[in-house]
Amino acid sequence: MGNSQPKLEKKFASLPAQVFPTSEREAANSENVRRSLRRSLRRAKKKKHEFSYDMRRASANPKRKIPHKVPLLDTVETLFLPEYSVNGHISERHFEVKEVIAKGAFGNVLKVLRWNDNKPFAMKVMKKHQVLEEGAVKQCKDEASIQAAVSSHPFIVEPHWFFQNRDFVFIVMEYIPRGELFAFWKQYDLFSEDLVRIYAAELGMVLDYLHMSGIIYRDLKMENILIDTEGDKIGTRKSNYSFFVIVDKYQGPCHIKVIDFGLAKWLKKSQKTSTICGTLQYIAPEILSLRPYGHTSDWWSLGILIYTLLVGHYPVKGAENHIQMRYMIEGHLYDLPEDGYYSEPCRDCVRMLLQKLPQTRICSMKALRRHIFIRDVNLESLYNRQFSPNKLIIELERHQREMTLSRSNSLADGLDDSLIHYGDLTFAWNQSVASLDAVDV
Image 1: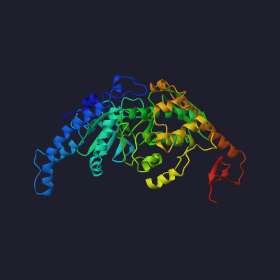
Image 2: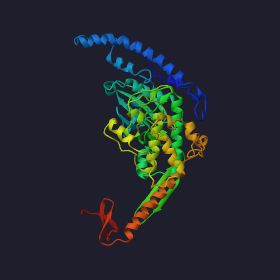
Image 3: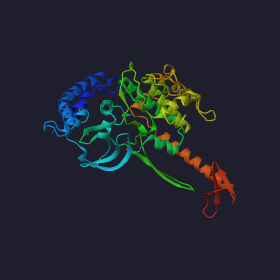
Image 4: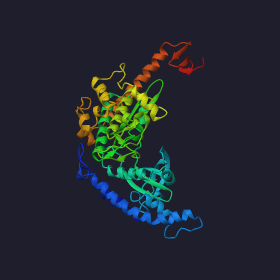
């Protein structure tokens, strides 16, 4: 079997119109994609069923040899066709593994270099035996077909190849060096309203695009959002303080890129599904209540993400299971803290995204862009990557450094040899090295 990527590219060459369609490829009907996939799947299943009878007989009688024309390898490979090609022009042998950059449910995501030009890529490797044990073959195939279908969007990671061998399936994608939004958030703790407004608009366009394409995402969280650094280097800045020296380099623009479509599913706007899945802190109330749900659940996750970026912690900590999480959500009021310096438009946007009743929630980009918090964002310029949030990130880091320096100076100015209590920690001023040392009391 040859590489099916050229065929997949043709299959996924059409997508529905969305907020800012830029080509015919994004403006066509996604139903054609699914119809083409179903035809390919029927052809693959026909071959698989030719093997199944002999395989059952071999299982019933261990001494019976499987006919040479029906090898086990072909049976397993057929399950993952046509999304994952076999014996194509590219395989895992064309890449050199450098490091593990993330871990998933069925395997790891690796940073790899292509042998001929040392170009970096991200390679997601999933173990077939684990996929089969979990009964997740359809989920694995949907991940490939969905990711290939929506790869033209500027805020979605672009996949390059899908292939398989005897033991693994592979997805090779563009490599985003800056890493996850989660690590970015842990570094800076709090994001400014201006930066959150930009990222909310970009994620809203992604969700709207997926929903218009007949896809529900179901796993929007900071770990599934990367910070893009493509573009020209805009300079090196140095800051020297008495307590630390910082040298950092920035590359713009710093937009978001959504990854990991492992829980995504083909779902028309009028349809609903009932599978309980996702990350507990981000799961919508209708999912936890075991009710059928639709695309509206993704907008709840966006509201949770915006709240967390602004406040520095989740509105409700993760529970042990979805039942406990359901009761915690029911008793929680989703408003930004009163002691925070948040504008009223920002508060109202979070409040409208985190409505517990789906019918009263902001559930479309059309509604989100009309909200006063997003209204002034030039979405077309943002979609075409003509505006960079890089300056906002620089300002965020400058503010963090100033706060850190101010805190350090305020602690050092009035210190003597006595103990100082700071939160849950106790320190003593070490005059010889001009630093604070933690002590046991």
